[in-house]
Amino acid sequence: MGCSSSVPVAHHHSDPQPKPKEHHHHKDKHQHSPPQQQQQQHQQYQPPPPQAAVTPFQLAPQRPLAKVEVNGQLIERYAAIERQINALERQNVVKNHEQVFRDIQQLEAKMRETRERYARCQAETRKEQQDVAKLQDPSVRNFFGDQAAFEQQYSKEQEEYLAALNREEMVKKELDSLDLQRQQRMRETTSLRSSIEELNQLCSEQDHILKAVFEGSYGSELEYTLEIKCDDLADRVERIRAAKDKWANAYSMLETANSQFAYAVQRWSELRNMPGSNPNGRYQMAVETRNYLCAALQNVEGAQRILNGIKFPYCAPDEMQTLRKAVEYIFCDMNTPPRHAHAFDCYSALYKRCHALVQWVKYVIDGTIKKDHDKVEAEFKAIQRQLREERMKLIHDKIHQVTGEQVDMKADDQPKNAAGEDDHQEEIKHEHSIVQPDVISAADMPGDKKEMPDVPPPPQPVAAPPPPQEQLAPPPSMEDLIGDVKEIQKRHEKDMEELRKTQENSRARADASLEAQLRERRSRQARLRVHEEQMQQMESVQ
Image (cartoon, rainbow, N blue to C red; front, side, top):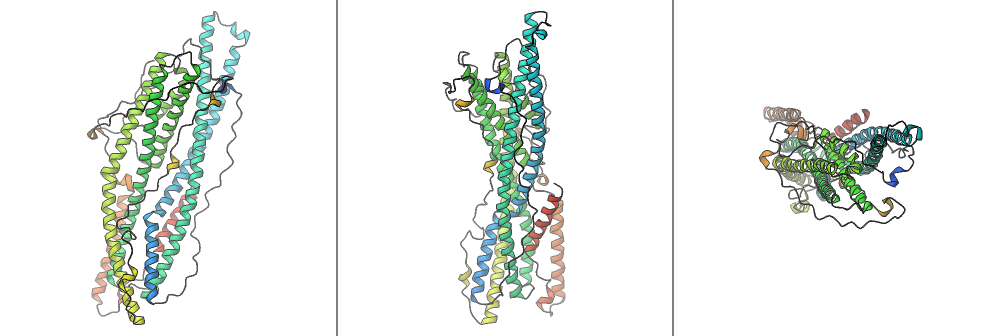
């Protein structure tokens, strides 16, 4: 079988791996008998029970807050609240909630498209089944001039029927996998909502304490300056953490896909040496190859959904469609050496492309995202630490002023990683997003004798050599990675201009009270209110 068409290159660069070629299915005189369990009468697809929709996001009403007593216990309570807030913010619960909700929207859209595709597959299978049945009618059979012409047409119709059966089963597996992923995401969003509610309550209590201690204003100009800088950096940190988590999860899925491609290519290669006297063994190897290729396809497409908006330079949609078409004819390709060899070339090409994609994603993470993440995190933690120290000093002074007590400065000390200084940023990994291949069992074997054939396990696949880094596609822009950089810069400049004006007013009114010099204290809950509004806007366009 020849290969005739190639896939266009996504970027102008030296491509380290050949692209898969279009898979052609030739009609031959070989009789293709579908596996017995695949010839069962088809039933109309019954969709799974409707899943509960995502309930509209709205922050719960705040619990009543106790009156703030300015005394020695206040500093300990404030320090405890700050530790809890820092722990939740390190988990990036707000941005992760937005990402999980987007995942649910994308999965639901993909499920709608896949259900429609599955219905079309069922109709195609019924048509192909009827075509085979018509040829078995004596009057139709007599229409052919000779036996050879009849066998050629009958072989063609059987092949189309077998491919339609396989295509239908592949789409059904994909639909089941999407449904499972959606259910998992629904459970995640419930957990994240709970964390956001907890964060909201803690921020409310922190605001309540600070407003009570400083009478609705700021304790010092330095506190205000540091808070402005901290809020600006917090937004950048949230974005870069979200990007880091997304790329880490996509990398995990692609690594799995790469291993699955390696196993499938190895198994398909071994099928060539399996004797025809062991049909069940050959069938098992073909099913295993198909299942691993299907899982790899879904994992690559899942990684693309996670990195929505990023154009993959390898394993582009048209390349994946080429592979999907080849897999549809796997039970026909297994029967003749030329077709087996052509299918092997198609599978191997995608394996090499996936391997290059894994290396490219790693290159983006290590060469771009991690460097920017580490830099912004270091800046944020430094400002966060200074802000904490300034507030603690001001609260100590206020307690001494009101009560005359000299609170022990060590009472509010935190473990070194409590504020996140040395904490490794925890990545929120969606391990359940990774699609694993179905395991073939004795019940799947054709014929009346339901037992597994004697098939040796394949040796450990040999990893393809990584392409040289200079041959990899260029990384995406920072705007593609973390969002609208210009908008982030605009917000930063606005905050800095506000800070400059406040400082000028402060110097111009040096004799005025501190409360008059500084603007009203901002609420930490404001960021969560913005998230609430954004989520409601996203929900309104479902």
